[in-house]
Image (cartoon, rainbow, N blue to C red):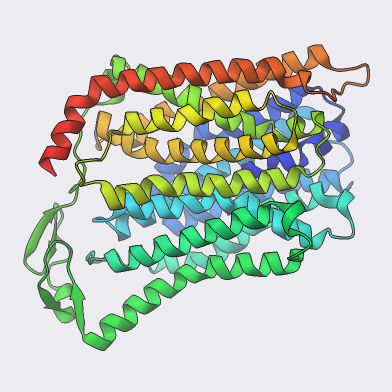
Length: 503
C-alpha cells in the first residue's frame, strides 16, 4: 500500500478545479510528491537506530498527515488551505513512501540473504498495485456518488497504509533473523501467484470490457483473494518442514536435521548452512567498489544517470500527467487508465526478477544495460503512438509505458550494485534516483508550458494538440536514452561476458 502517489492522476483534475490553479502549478504538485524522495535518506538513518516497526509507523503517520489534511480540505472540514499548504502536504506524503519502502527492503534482504534479489523484486513489484487496489475500493464505495471519488482516493491514501502498518508491526517487532534455507520451490509458487495476480489486475482494469461481466464488488473481492494467496507459501513450507523434520539447504543437496539449524546462525561475516559456508554477498559480482565522490567522476555513472532520466523518470512524468492527457482527449475513464498503468507496472517490476531467476546463469543472458535499452525501444514507440487520437492507442501506450517504467525501476537496483558496488549502495542509488524529482520538474513543467500555449480562455485544453509537441519531445528523449543505454552496454560488455563465463 506504499505506492500512494501513483493514483494522483485519478484525482488531479479535481484538485486543479478546486484550487483554481494552472497546469504548471498542478505539475508542481506532482513534482512535490517526487521531491519528497530527496529526503528519503532520513528513513535510512532512522532504520539504523530505531526498531523497524517504529520506522514503519512513522512513515505511515507522515502519510496520514499529508493525505489526511488534504482530504479534510476537499470535504470542507478545513475551509482555508493555500496552494503552498497543499504543496507542502504533498511533499510530506511523498516522503512517507520512502520510510515504508525502506522497511520493506530491509525485511526482504535480511530474511532472504541468499535470494535477496528475487525476494526484493517480488515484494517491491506489489507497490505498483497500490493504485489498482485503491481504484477498486473507490469503485465500490462511490458507485452511486462518482463526484466524491477524489475525496475517497485521498481518504484511502491516508488510512490504508497506517492500518496495514499497525497490523504488521507486531510481526516485524518479533522478527528473528535466522538461517536462510533453500526456498526455490517457494519462489516458483510465488512467481505463479504473482503472475496470476498481474493477469487478473490487467483484465479487471479494462473497465468498459469487464464492467458488464464482473461487478465492482466481485472485482475487489477477487483482488483481495489474490493478495492473500502468498500467505499460503510460508504456511506450506512450515507444514512441510514440520512433517518431514528436514530442510533443504541451498547449493547442497544433502538433507540436514532442523534441530541443528540453531547451532551456527550468528556468524558475523558468513552464512553457515549445515556445514556449507557461504559469503553473505554471494551472487553480487561488481565492477568496482566506489563511494559517491568517485562515482560522480565516472563516465559510466553519467551515462546511467541520463539513461534513467530519459527512461523510467520520463515514464513517471507521463503517468503523473495521465489525468490531464485523458481529459484533453475527451476520455472520461481516467481511473481505468490509472489501474491499467498500475497493473502493467506490477508486471514490469516483476519480470526482471523472473528472468534473473530463470536465466541469470544462462549463456543467453544479456547485460542489464542491454536489457534497459531493449526496454526503452518499445517505450519510444509508445510516445509516438500517442500522436494518434484514438482511445485504443491511449490504452496501448499507457500499458507499454507502465510495464517499461516498472521494469527499468526494478533493474536499476541491481544495476547500481553491479556498476558501483554494495558497500555504498544506499548513498549511490539515492544519487542516481535523484534524477526523478529533477526530471519530474523539468519534463513536467515543459509539458505544462506547452499545454498552456494551447489552452482556451477558461484555462483548459480539449484537443490532441495540447500534448502533441510534448509527445514528440518525450519520444525523441526516450530514443536518446536507448542509444545511451547501448553505449553503456558496450562499455560494460567485458564485465558481463566475464560474469556469464564465471557462472
